[in-house]
Length: 57
Image (cartoon, rainbow, N blue to C red; front, side):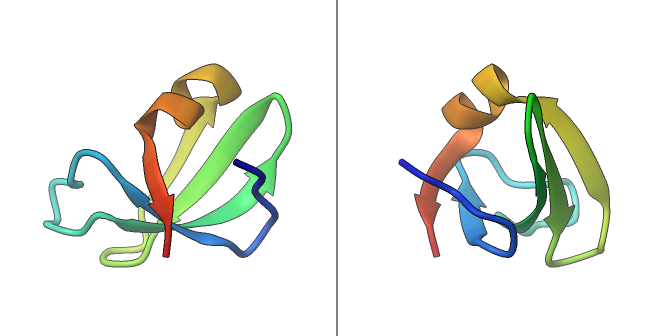
């Protein structure tokens, strides 16, 4: 699956705020996600991020 900045995705596990939807704000060796529920920012290595993503929203 190909991603670009601004894509909204759904994760397999839900964030502690209760939301599963995130926005991609940076792509590279790491992915940077912003929670659409509470605004929390998360930086994850690409390999782990690809396993965490369920689908594009």
